[in-house]
Image 1 (cartoon, one colour):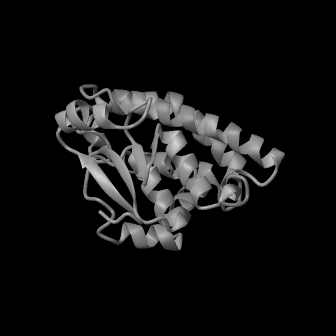
Image 2: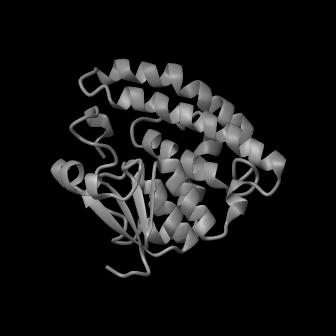
Image 3: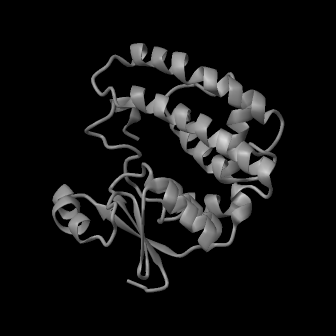
Length: 220
C-alpha cells in the first residue's frame, strides 16, 4: 500500500464509510479501502491489533495516526485538508451547522429504524417513514428553500443530507413532494469530484446496507 494514501477501514458495505469516501473525493485526499467481508478478520485479528483506545469501524489510518468513530473520521479529513469552512466560518455558521447535524442525525436514525425491520411488510413500514421522516423532510425543505446548499454554501451537513436523501430516493417516491430536495440530490451528484467518483470504479459495487439485516427494499 502506498504510504501517501490514507486507509479507510469498514465493512463490505457503503454505510458509514461512504461519507468518508465522498469527503476524500471532494477534498482530493488519496485513499484506499480496507473492506471487511469476514467478521473474524475484524473481531479476532484487526480490532485487537488496532492501536486505538476505541477500536471500531469505520477507522482511518494515516501513517501512525489511527482515528475511529464516524464523526471523528470526518472531522479528521476536513482538518487534514484545511477545509474548516466546511464546519462554518464564524460562530453563527458553526451553531447553524451543529443544529443541522442534530436534525439530520435524527432523520437518518428514523430511516434506519424502518430499514432494519427486515421482515416487516413494506407498506406498513412506509407508514413509519411517513410518520417519522417526512415531517423532518418538510422542515428541511422549508429551511433549504431555493438555496443550493443547507446554509447557503456547501458544508459538512450537505454530505450527511445527501446520504439520507439518496437512500430515500431509491426506496419510494418520498421526494416527489419536495422538488427542491430532489434538485439538491442531483446538485450534489453533479459536483465535479462526486460525479467523477460515481462514474469510476472507485464507486464500489457493494450494498449500501448489510443485506442480512435490512428489509429487501433497502438492499441496493
